[in-house]
Image (tube, rainbow, N blue to C red; front, side, top):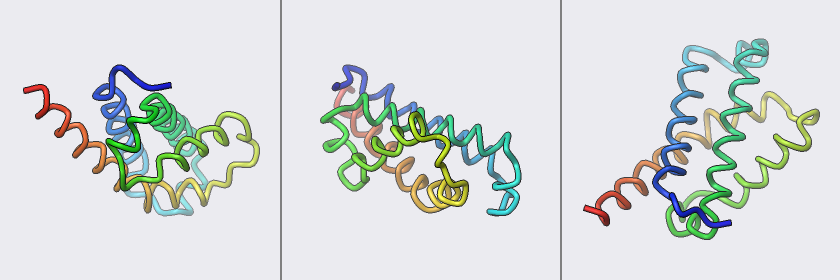
Length: 118
């Protein structure tokens, strides 16, 4: 499914990435793994991010060429369907290592889209 609202989907990625950053600010892995409220919120935000990437459809490869958008989509399926197998340290790794580049790539893609329409 391809989105007719790519800018909105990119904003979804950015906003949920920013929310995760706020939720985990000042935490280390141990604090994150011990805080179910925060880890549950992070899971939900990652699920939204995955759904936004899925809704971008084929546009994901064009708008976010440096990001592993196919893995992001697949991770969304894990969050939705294999939630009982989610390992909190893997969530932490995604938050700290993968999410910042996705959010930045989404910002760049959004600016590019906005410049095309101005």
